[in-house]
Length: 353
Image 1 (cartoon, rainbow, N blue to C red):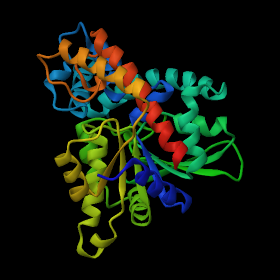
Image 2 (tube, rainbow, N blue to C red):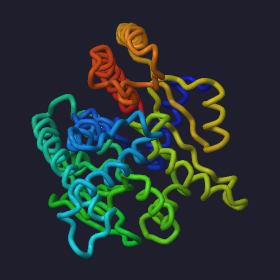
Image 3 (cartoon, helix red, strand yellow):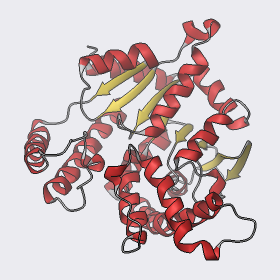
Image 4 (tube, helix red, strand yellow):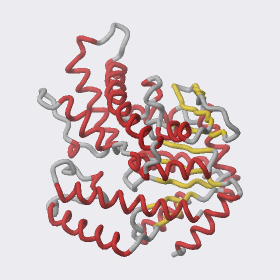
C-alpha cells in the first residue's frame, strides 16, 4: 500500500506541473452546507408527494437516479392536468423537478454566498481548490464554484451540455485569474434538459458522449492530465458513469499505455480486493488520509452506536446512504462527525499538495 506521504508527493508534483484536475462531487459541496443528493430526494421530492396516493420509498430502488425517475412519473400523475399540449410526460416531470431544484438550491446558494463573503471556515476548501487549480470539473448542479470565484474576484468561464450542444457562460468579474468550470451534469439555473438526474438522463448522456464538444474537452483533458476525485463515495452513480467513460476511452489498444492516473480521496481505506479492482480495472488510486486520533476515535464510537441502532438493516458506508438517516439520532450524529472528519482530511490534503 502506498503511504500517505507518497500520495502527497505525487499529487504535489502533478499540481505544480499543472497536470492535475479536481473533479468535485456532492460531498465536497456539503462543506458549504449544500445537501447530498439523497438528502435532496428525501427532504424535497419525497416530502412533496407524501400524503398523496403515491409514496417515494428509497428502500424500493437500487439507486437515487431510479428513485428520481419514479418521482418524475409520480408528479406527472398527480399534476398532468397542468401539462402543456406539447410536453411529454417525461418533459413535464423534469420541469417540475427543476422547479424543486431551484427552490432548494437557490436557498443554499444564498447561505453559501454569505459564508464565502464572510470568510467562514466552511468556505475554506472551495477557496483552496480555486486558488490551486484553473480547470475544475463537477457533477454538482449548484453554484458553489461560481460563488467562490466571485468571493475571490476571479473571473471564470463555465460549460454545460444541453442535448449535444455545449453551452458556454462567463462570470462578471474580470481578472488575470481565469477559471474554467465544467458542469458535467448540468446547471440548475439552466435548461432542465442540461440536468442529469434520473435513469433516462444517464442513458441520454451516455448516448451522446461521442457526439458533443463537452465530452471532447473531457477526453482531451483526460489524455493530458491526472484527475483528483473529491466528495464521492463508492456507491455514487456519477463517478461510476465517469469511470466507465474513461475506461471505454482508454481500452483501445493505442491508448492503453497512456491511461491517466485517477486519484480518489476516500473517507476510509477500501478493502484490499476493492482497491486492487479499482486500480487494475479503472486506473483509480484510492487515497485515504489520517486525521488526529481524537477525531478518529469519535467517529469510531459514533459508527458503533449507529450500527447497533440499524443492525437489522444494511449499513452502507455513511449516514448519507442510510434510509433511516432522517429519523435516527445516531445516524445524524454520525453524519456530522463524518463530515467534520472528511473536512479535516481534505484540508490536510490540500495544504500538502
